[in-house]
Amino acid sequence: MEKPQYNTDIVKSFVHSSVLWGLVTVLVGLVVSVQLTNPELNFPPYFTYGRLRPLHTNAGFFGWVVGFIFATFYYIVQRLCKVRLWSDKLATFQLWFFNATIVATAITLLLGYTTSKEYHEMEWPIDLMIIILWVTFAVNIVMTIIKRKEEQMYISLWYMLAAIVGVAILFLVNSAAVPVSLFKSYSAFAGTNDANVQWWFGHNAVAMLLTAPPLAMFYYFLPKSTGVPIYSHKISIISFWSMIFMYLWTGAHHLLWTPVPDWIQTLAMAFSVMLIAPSWGSVINGYMSMKGQWHQMRENYLVKFLILGITFYGLQTLQGPMQAIRSFSAFIHYTDWVPAHIHMGTMGWVSMIGFASIYYLVPRIYGKELYSIPLANVHFWLALTGQLVWSISLWIAGVLQAGMWTAMNPDGSLTYTFMETMVEMYPYWWARTAGGALFFFGILVFIYNLFKTVRNGEKTAPLTAIAQGRA
Amino acid sequence: MDLASILYLGVTFGLFAIFAWIVIRTYSRKNRDKNEIAKYRMLDDD
Image 1 (cartoon, rainbow over the protein chains, first blue to last red):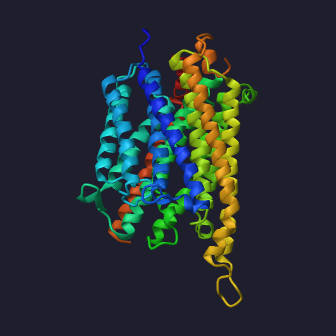
Image 2: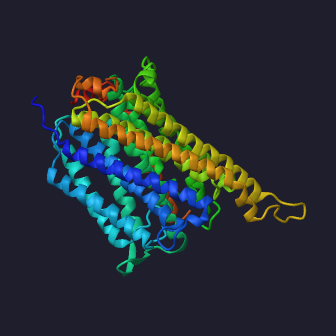
Image 3: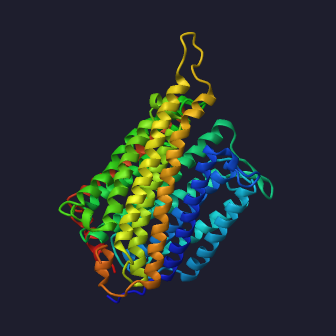
Protein backbone atom coordinates (compact mmCIF):
# COMPACT_ATOMS: atom_id res chain seq x y z
CA MET A 1 0.00 0.00 0.00
CA GLU A 2 1.29 3.46 -0.93
CA LYS A 3 2.40 5.44 2.11
CA PRO A 4 0.21 8.53 2.61
CA GLN A 5 1.81 11.97 2.96
CA TYR A 6 0.72 13.05 6.40
CA ASN A 7 0.16 16.69 7.32
CA THR A 8 2.76 17.42 9.99
CA ASP A 9 2.78 21.22 9.63
CA ILE A 10 -0.52 21.53 11.46
CA VAL A 11 0.80 19.30 14.26
CA LYS A 12 3.85 21.57 14.62
CA SER A 13 1.70 24.70 14.79
CA PHE A 14 -0.62 23.30 17.44
CA VAL A 15 2.37 22.13 19.49
CA HIS A 16 3.77 25.70 19.40
CA SER A 17 0.42 27.19 20.47
CA SER A 18 -0.14 24.63 23.19
CA VAL A 19 3.31 25.10 24.72
CA LEU A 20 2.88 28.89 24.67
CA TRP A 21 -0.48 28.68 26.48
CA GLY A 22 0.95 26.10 28.87
CA LEU A 23 3.63 28.60 29.87
CA VAL A 24 0.99 31.32 30.37
CA THR A 25 -1.15 28.95 32.45
CA VAL A 26 1.57 27.98 34.89
CA LEU A 27 2.93 31.54 35.12
CA VAL A 28 -0.51 32.96 35.93
CA GLY A 29 -1.08 30.07 38.36
CA LEU A 30 2.12 31.03 40.14
CA VAL A 31 1.01 34.67 40.29
CA VAL A 32 -2.42 33.86 41.78
CA SER A 33 -0.86 31.55 44.37
CA VAL A 34 1.39 34.43 45.52
CA GLN A 35 -1.61 36.78 45.53
CA LEU A 36 -3.22 34.54 48.18
CA THR A 37 -0.26 34.86 50.53
CA ASN A 38 0.46 38.48 49.61
CA PRO A 39 -2.84 40.25 48.94
CA GLU A 40 -0.98 43.53 48.30
CA LEU A 41 0.08 41.99 44.97
CA ASN A 42 -3.50 42.27 43.69
CA PHE A 43 -3.65 45.21 41.28
CA PRO A 44 -7.27 46.21 40.68
CA PRO A 45 -9.20 46.23 38.50
CA TYR A 46 -7.51 43.94 35.94
CA PHE A 47 -4.88 41.97 37.84
CA THR A 48 -6.76 40.74 40.86
CA TYR A 49 -7.10 37.14 42.02
CA GLY A 50 -10.76 37.14 40.95
CA ARG A 51 -9.87 37.94 37.33
CA LEU A 52 -6.57 36.09 37.04
CA ARG A 53 -7.78 32.78 38.49
CA PRO A 54 -10.30 32.12 35.67
CA LEU A 55 -7.57 33.15 33.22
CA HIS A 56 -5.33 30.47 34.78
CA THR A 57 -7.99 27.74 34.55
CA ASN A 58 -9.24 28.65 31.07
CA ALA A 59 -5.74 29.04 29.62
CA GLY A 60 -4.98 25.63 31.15
CA PHE A 61 -8.04 23.80 29.90
CA PHE A 62 -8.65 25.52 26.59
CA GLY A 63 -5.13 26.72 25.68
CA TRP A 64 -2.64 24.17 26.97
CA VAL A 65 -4.78 21.01 27.07
CA VAL A 66 -7.03 21.63 24.05
CA GLY A 67 -3.93 22.83 22.17
CA PHE A 68 -2.11 19.53 22.62
CA ILE A 69 -5.36 17.62 22.06
CA PHE A 70 -5.54 19.24 18.61
CA ALA A 71 -1.84 18.53 17.94
CA THR A 72 -1.87 14.91 19.04
CA PHE A 73 -5.27 14.04 17.58
CA TYR A 74 -4.21 15.34 14.17
CA TYR A 75 -1.00 13.32 14.42
CA ILE A 76 -2.69 10.15 15.66
CA VAL A 77 -5.81 10.14 13.46
CA GLN A 78 -3.80 10.26 10.22
CA ARG A 79 -1.63 7.33 11.27
CA LEU A 80 -4.33 5.12 12.75
CA CYS A 81 -6.50 5.69 9.68
CA LYS A 82 -3.52 5.58 7.27
CA VAL A 83 -4.84 8.57 5.34
CA ARG A 84 -3.96 12.24 5.16
CA LEU A 85 -6.08 14.69 7.09
CA TRP A 86 -9.44 15.29 5.38
CA SER A 87 -8.94 19.06 5.01
CA ASP A 88 -5.67 20.96 5.49
CA LYS A 89 -7.40 24.30 4.95
CA LEU A 90 -9.98 23.63 7.64
CA ALA A 91 -7.19 22.68 10.05
CA THR A 92 -5.27 25.89 9.28
CA PHE A 93 -8.42 27.95 9.83
CA GLN A 94 -8.92 26.09 13.09
CA LEU A 95 -5.37 26.93 14.23
CA TRP A 96 -5.83 30.68 13.81
CA PHE A 97 -9.37 30.66 15.15
CA PHE A 98 -8.19 28.67 18.19
CA ASN A 99 -5.57 31.26 19.11
CA ALA A 100 -7.99 34.13 18.43
CA THR A 101 -10.54 32.51 20.75
CA ILE A 102 -8.03 32.06 23.57
CA VAL A 103 -6.85 35.68 23.21
CA ALA A 104 -10.47 36.92 23.22
CA THR A 105 -11.15 34.81 26.31
CA ALA A 106 -8.11 36.19 28.13
CA ILE A 107 -8.95 39.82 27.29
CA THR A 108 -12.63 39.58 28.27
CA LEU A 109 -11.86 37.77 31.53
CA LEU A 110 -9.32 40.44 32.51
CA LEU A 111 -11.92 43.11 31.65
CA GLY A 112 -14.30 41.40 34.06
CA TYR A 113 -16.82 39.92 31.61
CA THR A 114 -17.88 36.61 33.10
CA THR A 115 -20.87 34.30 33.40
CA SER A 116 -19.56 33.31 36.86
CA LYS A 117 -19.85 29.61 35.91
CA GLU A 118 -16.66 27.80 36.86
CA TYR A 119 -14.70 26.57 33.80
CA HIS A 120 -17.34 28.22 31.59
CA GLU A 121 -16.81 31.88 32.45
CA MET A 122 -16.73 33.08 28.84
CA GLU A 123 -19.64 35.24 27.70
CA TRP A 124 -21.89 34.26 24.82
CA PRO A 125 -19.93 35.72 21.83
CA ILE A 126 -16.93 33.61 22.86
CA ASP A 127 -19.21 30.60 23.36
CA LEU A 128 -20.16 31.00 19.70
CA MET A 129 -16.48 31.12 18.71
CA ILE A 130 -15.81 27.94 20.68
CA ILE A 131 -18.74 26.18 19.00
CA ILE A 132 -17.40 27.12 15.51
CA LEU A 133 -13.94 25.95 16.56
CA TRP A 134 -15.15 22.61 17.87
CA VAL A 135 -17.38 21.91 14.87
CA THR A 136 -14.43 22.62 12.56
CA PHE A 137 -12.27 20.20 14.52
CA ALA A 138 -15.01 17.54 14.74
CA VAL A 139 -15.71 17.62 10.99
CA ASN A 140 -12.03 17.18 10.13
CA ILE A 141 -11.48 14.30 12.56
CA VAL A 142 -14.74 12.49 11.76
CA MET A 143 -14.26 12.82 7.98
CA THR A 144 -10.70 11.50 8.30
CA ILE A 145 -11.99 8.50 10.26
CA ILE A 146 -14.77 7.90 7.71
CA LYS A 147 -12.32 7.70 4.80
CA ARG A 148 -9.81 5.55 6.74
CA LYS A 149 -7.98 2.64 5.14
CA GLU A 150 -7.82 0.58 8.32
CA GLU A 151 -10.85 -1.61 8.93
CA GLN A 152 -10.67 -1.80 12.70
CA MET A 153 -10.61 1.27 14.88
CA TYR A 154 -7.85 1.27 17.51
CA ILE A 155 -9.01 2.29 21.00
CA SER A 156 -7.48 5.79 20.75
CA LEU A 157 -9.93 6.63 17.95
CA TRP A 158 -12.87 5.66 20.19
CA TYR A 159 -11.67 7.97 22.95
CA MET A 160 -11.16 10.74 20.41
CA LEU A 161 -14.71 10.41 19.09
CA ALA A 162 -16.11 10.33 22.64
CA ALA A 163 -14.26 13.54 23.48
CA ILE A 164 -15.53 15.26 20.35
CA VAL A 165 -19.18 14.27 20.85
CA GLY A 166 -19.08 14.68 24.64
CA VAL A 167 -17.62 18.18 24.67
CA ALA A 168 -20.09 19.29 21.97
CA ILE A 169 -23.14 18.15 23.97
CA LEU A 170 -21.88 19.46 27.32
CA PHE A 171 -20.85 22.83 25.96
CA LEU A 172 -24.03 23.41 23.96
CA VAL A 173 -26.34 22.63 26.88
CA ASN A 174 -24.39 24.64 29.45
CA SER A 175 -24.07 27.59 27.03
CA ALA A 176 -27.85 28.00 26.79
CA ALA A 177 -28.33 31.62 27.81
CA VAL A 178 -30.31 34.77 27.07
CA PRO A 179 -28.02 37.60 25.92
CA VAL A 180 -28.99 41.05 27.19
CA SER A 181 -26.02 42.92 25.70
CA LEU A 182 -22.84 42.17 23.79
CA PHE A 183 -21.03 40.99 26.92
CA LYS A 184 -23.77 40.01 29.30
CA SER A 185 -26.12 37.05 29.31
CA TYR A 186 -28.23 35.15 31.81
CA SER A 187 -28.40 31.37 32.02
CA ALA A 188 -31.42 29.70 30.43
CA PHE A 189 -31.73 27.59 33.59
CA ALA A 190 -32.74 28.79 37.03
CA GLY A 191 -31.86 27.95 40.62
CA THR A 192 -30.89 24.37 41.41
CA ASN A 193 -31.45 23.36 37.77
CA ASP A 194 -28.76 25.84 36.77
CA ALA A 195 -26.39 24.45 39.40
CA ASN A 196 -27.14 20.90 38.31
CA VAL A 197 -26.52 21.64 34.62
CA GLN A 198 -23.38 23.60 35.48
CA TRP A 199 -21.85 20.68 37.42
CA TRP A 200 -23.05 18.14 34.90
CA PHE A 201 -20.94 20.25 32.49
CA GLY A 202 -18.13 20.94 34.98
CA HIS A 203 -17.47 17.38 35.99
CA ASN A 204 -17.94 15.94 32.53
CA ALA A 205 -15.58 18.52 31.07
CA VAL A 206 -13.11 16.64 33.29
CA ALA A 207 -14.27 13.42 31.62
CA MET A 208 -14.26 14.60 28.03
CA LEU A 209 -11.27 16.97 28.09
CA LEU A 210 -9.07 15.70 30.91
CA THR A 211 -9.75 11.95 30.78
CA ALA A 212 -10.80 10.68 27.34
CA PRO A 213 -8.16 12.60 25.29
CA PRO A 214 -5.20 11.78 27.59
CA LEU A 215 -6.32 8.13 27.53
CA ALA A 216 -6.36 8.28 23.71
CA MET A 217 -2.78 9.60 23.87
CA PHE A 218 -1.69 7.12 26.53
CA TYR A 219 -2.99 4.15 24.54
CA TYR A 220 -1.20 5.44 21.45
CA PHE A 221 2.09 6.73 22.80
CA LEU A 222 2.81 4.02 25.39
CA PRO A 223 3.08 1.14 22.88
CA LYS A 224 4.84 3.45 20.43
CA SER A 225 7.39 4.36 23.11
CA THR A 226 7.99 0.86 24.47
CA GLY A 227 7.78 -0.87 21.09
CA VAL A 228 5.34 -3.50 22.41
CA PRO A 229 1.54 -3.52 22.04
CA ILE A 230 -0.89 -2.78 24.85
CA TYR A 231 -1.79 -5.75 27.05
CA SER A 232 -5.42 -6.10 25.95
CA HIS A 233 -7.42 -4.25 23.33
CA LYS A 234 -10.58 -5.96 24.61
CA ILE A 235 -10.10 -4.58 28.14
CA SER A 236 -9.55 -1.13 26.66
CA ILE A 237 -12.86 -1.41 24.76
CA ILE A 238 -14.81 -2.55 27.83
CA SER A 239 -13.18 0.18 29.97
CA PHE A 240 -14.11 2.72 27.33
CA TRP A 241 -17.77 1.78 27.12
CA SER A 242 -18.22 1.42 30.87
CA MET A 243 -16.66 4.85 31.35
CA ILE A 244 -19.00 6.32 28.74
CA PHE A 245 -22.06 4.75 30.40
CA MET A 246 -21.09 5.83 33.92
CA TYR A 247 -19.39 9.20 33.71
CA LEU A 248 -22.30 11.38 32.64
CA TRP A 249 -24.28 10.61 35.81
CA THR A 250 -21.68 11.80 38.29
CA GLY A 251 -21.74 15.62 38.04
CA ALA A 252 -24.08 16.14 41.00
CA HIS A 253 -21.45 14.86 43.42
CA HIS A 254 -20.26 18.49 43.33
CA LEU A 255 -23.61 19.41 44.86
CA LEU A 256 -23.82 17.06 47.85
CA TRP A 257 -25.58 18.68 50.84
CA THR A 258 -27.20 21.30 48.59
CA PRO A 259 -30.89 21.84 47.66
CA VAL A 260 -30.47 19.56 44.61
CA PRO A 261 -32.88 16.58 45.05
CA ASP A 262 -31.52 13.90 47.33
CA TRP A 263 -31.95 11.09 44.79
CA ILE A 264 -29.79 12.95 42.23
CA GLN A 265 -27.03 13.29 44.84
CA THR A 266 -27.26 9.57 45.71
CA LEU A 267 -27.22 8.60 42.04
CA ALA A 268 -24.10 10.74 41.45
CA MET A 269 -22.43 9.26 44.53
CA ALA A 270 -23.15 5.67 43.45
CA PHE A 271 -22.00 6.19 39.87
CA SER A 272 -18.84 7.97 41.08
CA VAL A 273 -17.86 4.91 43.13
CA MET A 274 -18.72 2.57 40.23
CA LEU A 275 -16.45 4.65 38.01
CA ILE A 276 -13.42 3.21 39.79
CA ALA A 277 -13.84 0.02 37.71
CA PRO A 278 -13.41 1.48 34.19
CA SER A 279 -10.74 3.91 35.35
CA TRP A 280 -8.68 1.14 36.88
CA GLY A 281 -9.36 -1.01 33.83
CA SER A 282 -7.18 1.45 31.90
CA VAL A 283 -4.62 1.74 34.69
CA ILE A 284 -4.22 -2.06 34.95
CA ASN A 285 -4.09 -2.35 31.16
CA GLY A 286 -1.29 0.22 31.20
CA TYR A 287 0.66 -1.57 33.93
CA MET A 288 0.18 -4.98 32.29
CA SER A 289 1.47 -3.50 29.02
CA MET A 290 4.76 -2.97 30.85
CA LYS A 291 5.13 -6.67 31.61
CA GLY A 292 8.76 -7.52 30.85
CA GLN A 293 9.39 -3.86 30.01
CA TRP A 294 9.76 -2.28 33.47
CA HIS A 295 13.47 -1.72 32.83
CA GLN A 296 12.33 0.97 30.40
CA MET A 297 11.30 3.07 33.40
CA ARG A 298 15.03 3.60 33.93
CA GLU A 299 16.07 3.82 30.29
CA ASN A 300 13.26 5.59 28.47
CA TYR A 301 12.22 9.10 29.50
CA LEU A 302 8.94 8.85 27.57
CA VAL A 303 7.89 5.78 29.56
CA LYS A 304 8.63 7.60 32.83
CA PHE A 305 6.22 10.40 31.95
CA LEU A 306 3.56 8.00 30.66
CA ILE A 307 3.65 5.51 33.55
CA LEU A 308 3.79 8.21 36.22
CA GLY A 309 0.91 9.87 34.38
CA ILE A 310 -1.27 6.75 34.46
CA THR A 311 -0.31 6.22 38.11
CA PHE A 312 -1.59 9.67 38.99
CA TYR A 313 -4.72 8.86 36.98
CA GLY A 314 -5.18 5.77 39.14
CA LEU A 315 -4.72 7.74 42.35
CA GLN A 316 -7.00 10.49 41.08
CA THR A 317 -9.78 8.04 40.25
CA LEU A 318 -9.63 6.54 43.74
CA GLN A 319 -9.53 9.87 45.52
CA GLY A 320 -12.33 11.36 43.39
CA PRO A 321 -14.94 8.71 44.27
CA MET A 322 -13.90 8.94 47.92
CA GLN A 323 -14.63 12.67 47.84
CA ALA A 324 -17.99 11.93 46.20
CA ILE A 325 -19.20 10.06 49.30
CA ARG A 326 -21.50 12.24 51.41
CA SER A 327 -19.76 11.85 54.77
CA PHE A 328 -16.28 12.55 53.40
CA SER A 329 -17.56 15.39 51.22
CA ALA A 330 -19.09 17.02 54.30
CA PHE A 331 -15.61 17.16 55.80
CA ILE A 332 -13.40 18.28 52.93
CA HIS A 333 -15.68 20.15 50.50
CA TYR A 334 -14.84 23.88 50.22
CA THR A 335 -11.40 23.28 51.79
CA ASP A 336 -7.97 23.37 50.16
CA TRP A 337 -8.16 19.58 49.74
CA VAL A 338 -10.17 20.08 46.55
CA PRO A 339 -7.63 22.16 44.54
CA ALA A 340 -4.99 19.62 45.62
CA HIS A 341 -7.16 16.89 44.07
CA ILE A 342 -7.67 18.68 40.76
CA HIS A 343 -4.01 19.64 40.51
CA MET A 344 -2.97 15.99 40.92
CA GLY A 345 -5.14 15.43 37.85
CA THR A 346 -3.98 18.42 35.80
CA MET A 347 -0.28 18.49 36.76
CA GLY A 348 0.20 14.80 37.48
CA TRP A 349 -2.01 13.00 34.98
CA VAL A 350 -2.93 15.32 32.09
CA SER A 351 0.28 17.35 31.86
CA MET A 352 2.54 14.30 32.25
CA ILE A 353 0.77 12.69 29.29
CA GLY A 354 0.93 16.01 27.41
CA PHE A 355 4.68 16.33 28.03
CA ALA A 356 5.28 12.73 26.90
CA SER A 357 3.18 13.25 23.78
CA ILE A 358 5.01 16.43 22.81
CA TYR A 359 8.43 14.88 23.54
CA TYR A 360 7.40 12.02 21.24
CA LEU A 361 6.06 14.29 18.51
CA VAL A 362 8.73 16.98 18.21
CA PRO A 363 11.68 14.75 17.18
CA ARG A 364 9.41 12.95 14.68
CA ILE A 365 7.75 15.94 13.05
CA TYR A 366 11.04 17.84 12.78
CA GLY A 367 13.07 14.73 11.89
CA LYS A 368 15.63 15.53 14.58
CA GLU A 369 16.88 13.89 17.73
CA LEU A 370 15.85 15.37 21.04
CA TYR A 371 18.50 17.92 22.05
CA SER A 372 19.04 16.50 25.53
CA ILE A 373 17.63 13.43 27.25
CA PRO A 374 19.24 14.45 30.60
CA LEU A 375 17.29 17.71 30.39
CA ALA A 376 14.08 15.73 29.72
CA ASN A 377 14.86 13.76 32.88
CA VAL A 378 15.45 16.98 34.82
CA HIS A 379 12.06 18.17 33.57
CA PHE A 380 10.46 14.91 34.70
CA TRP A 381 11.80 15.24 38.26
CA LEU A 382 10.90 18.94 38.49
CA ALA A 383 7.35 18.18 37.31
CA LEU A 384 6.96 15.21 39.65
CA THR A 385 8.43 16.96 42.71
CA GLY A 386 6.51 20.15 41.98
CA GLN A 387 3.24 18.29 41.69
CA LEU A 388 3.80 16.28 44.88
CA VAL A 389 4.79 19.36 46.92
CA TRP A 390 1.75 21.21 45.53
CA SER A 391 -0.80 18.52 46.28
CA ILE A 392 0.53 17.06 49.53
CA SER A 393 0.84 20.49 51.18
CA LEU A 394 -2.75 21.35 50.30
CA TRP A 395 -4.12 17.94 51.36
CA ILE A 396 -2.64 18.59 54.80
CA ALA A 397 -3.98 22.15 54.69
CA GLY A 398 -7.45 20.88 53.71
CA VAL A 399 -7.67 18.41 56.60
CA LEU A 400 -6.42 21.06 59.03
CA GLN A 401 -8.89 23.59 57.66
CA ALA A 402 -11.81 21.14 57.87
CA GLY A 403 -10.86 20.20 61.42
CA MET A 404 -10.70 23.84 62.50
CA TRP A 405 -13.97 24.75 60.78
CA THR A 406 -15.85 21.96 62.53
CA ALA A 407 -14.19 22.19 65.97
CA MET A 408 -16.69 23.16 68.65
CA ASN A 409 -16.54 24.26 72.27
CA PRO A 410 -18.58 22.38 74.92
CA ASP A 411 -21.25 25.12 74.72
CA GLY A 412 -21.71 24.49 70.97
CA SER A 413 -19.93 27.63 69.75
CA LEU A 414 -17.17 27.41 67.11
CA THR A 415 -13.66 27.05 68.53
CA TYR A 416 -11.94 29.06 65.79
CA THR A 417 -12.86 32.18 63.89
CA PHE A 418 -12.60 32.01 60.09
CA MET A 419 -9.62 34.40 60.23
CA GLU A 420 -7.77 32.06 62.60
CA THR A 421 -8.20 29.21 60.12
CA MET A 422 -6.86 31.46 57.34
CA VAL A 423 -3.71 32.33 59.29
CA GLU A 424 -2.99 28.62 59.78
CA MET A 425 -2.99 28.14 56.00
CA TYR A 426 -0.04 30.41 55.25
CA PRO A 427 2.82 27.84 55.52
CA TYR A 428 0.91 25.45 53.26
CA TRP A 429 0.15 28.16 50.73
CA TRP A 430 3.85 29.01 50.57
CA ALA A 431 4.59 25.33 50.05
CA ARG A 432 2.03 25.33 47.24
CA THR A 433 3.81 28.29 45.61
CA ALA A 434 7.14 26.44 45.94
CA GLY A 435 5.60 23.38 44.25
CA GLY A 436 4.20 25.56 41.47
CA ALA A 437 7.62 27.23 41.04
CA LEU A 438 9.30 23.83 40.62
CA PHE A 439 6.70 22.86 38.02
CA PHE A 440 7.23 26.21 36.26
CA PHE A 441 11.03 25.69 36.13
CA GLY A 442 10.29 22.27 34.65
CA ILE A 443 8.25 23.93 31.89
CA LEU A 444 11.15 26.31 31.17
CA VAL A 445 13.51 23.33 30.84
CA PHE A 446 10.94 21.61 28.59
CA ILE A 447 10.65 24.65 26.30
CA TYR A 448 14.44 25.14 26.17
CA ASN A 449 14.92 21.48 25.23
CA LEU A 450 12.28 21.67 22.49
CA PHE A 451 13.68 24.95 21.17
CA LYS A 452 17.21 23.56 20.98
CA THR A 453 15.88 20.38 19.34
CA VAL A 454 14.21 22.36 16.58
CA ARG A 455 17.12 24.79 16.13
CA ASN A 456 20.19 22.60 16.69
CA GLY A 457 18.99 18.99 16.93
CA GLU A 458 20.97 16.47 14.93
CA LYS A 459 19.34 14.72 12.00
CA THR A 460 20.42 11.20 12.74
CA ALA A 461 19.05 7.99 14.26
CA PRO A 462 16.35 5.89 12.69
CA LEU A 463 12.84 7.10 13.48
CA THR A 464 11.99 4.07 15.60
CA ALA A 465 14.83 4.84 17.99
CA ILE A 466 13.76 8.47 18.22
CA ALA A 467 10.19 7.38 18.81
CA GLN A 468 11.17 5.05 21.59
CA GLY A 469 12.93 7.81 23.52
CA ARG A 470 16.28 6.05 23.53
CA ALA A 471 18.06 7.84 20.73
CA MET B 1 -44.52 4.58 40.84
CA ASP B 2 -45.43 7.33 38.35
CA LEU B 3 -44.86 7.33 34.60
CA ALA B 4 -41.66 9.43 34.86
CA SER B 5 -40.12 6.91 37.26
CA ILE B 6 -41.03 4.00 34.99
CA LEU B 7 -39.48 5.79 32.01
CA TYR B 8 -36.36 6.58 34.01
CA LEU B 9 -36.03 2.95 35.07
CA GLY B 10 -36.65 1.86 31.47
CA VAL B 11 -33.85 4.07 30.16
CA THR B 12 -31.51 2.70 32.86
CA PHE B 13 -32.29 -0.93 31.97
CA GLY B 14 -32.03 -0.07 28.26
CA LEU B 15 -28.55 1.38 28.75
CA PHE B 16 -27.52 -1.61 30.81
CA ALA B 17 -28.78 -3.97 28.07
CA ILE B 18 -26.71 -2.09 25.45
CA PHE B 19 -23.63 -2.31 27.66
CA ALA B 20 -24.18 -6.04 28.27
CA TRP B 21 -24.47 -6.55 24.51
CA ILE B 22 -21.14 -4.73 23.96
CA VAL B 23 -19.40 -6.95 26.56
CA ILE B 24 -20.85 -10.15 25.08
CA ARG B 25 -19.95 -9.09 21.55
CA THR B 26 -16.39 -8.08 22.50
CA TYR B 27 -15.68 -11.40 24.21
CA SER B 28 -17.64 -13.64 21.82
CA ARG B 29 -15.70 -16.52 20.27
CA LYS B 30 -16.16 -14.90 16.86
CA ASN B 31 -14.65 -11.52 17.82
CA ARG B 32 -12.25 -12.39 20.64
CA ASP B 33 -9.13 -12.67 18.51
CA LYS B 34 -10.24 -10.19 15.87
CA ASN B 35 -10.51 -7.49 18.54
CA GLU B 36 -6.80 -7.73 19.28
CA ILE B 37 -5.61 -7.15 15.70
CA ALA B 38 -5.69 -3.33 15.99
CA LYS B 39 -3.12 -3.24 18.79
CA TYR B 40 -0.54 -4.93 16.55
CA ARG B 41 -1.37 -2.97 13.43
CA MET B 42 -1.01 0.40 15.17
CA LEU B 43 2.66 -0.32 15.90
CA ASP B 44 3.33 -0.19 12.20
CA ASP B 45 1.42 2.92 11.19
CA ASP B 46 4.30 5.22 10.27
